[in-house]
Image (cartoon, rainbow, N blue to C red; front, side):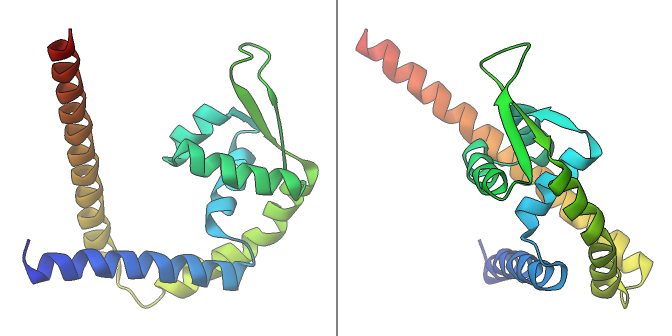
Amino acid sequence: MNDRHSALLRQLGRTARAMYAAFEEEVGYALPRWRILQALHMQSCLTQKDLAARLEMDPGALTRQLKVLEAEGMITRRRAVEDNRLSDVELTPAGADLIAGMQPRRHAFLRRMLRDFPGDELDTTMAVLERMEARFHTVAGESRARRERERMKDESREE
């Protein structure tokens, strides 16, 4: 990897961290938790598994965030009726009120952050980021498959 590639990946990390911090300062709520509340606002009840998939969030990280949201009274969790191995997650009235009250600040934040960027630059940036995300997913999938093949080889040698 050359210095340009390393610099780009470092910049992506710094940009993401700056965005998370600015969102929390401007909107008044941490972005990871906001995303959870917003997803539940869009669909009133989801299993924790479906919520993790929808948000493309690590299940362990999601559980940690849900514990905080539950302690704040923003969500409830209970065993799913159809399958008691799953947990249903639902927005409480307090969570719905929080989302409704903060939506104007969220919209203002997005407008403020992106107002000086011409549409063609935003389109190009989005296209590049989507390609990078797809590549990251591909590489991660290939790595998981390689580790699984190695694990199976090791197990067959042990037999």
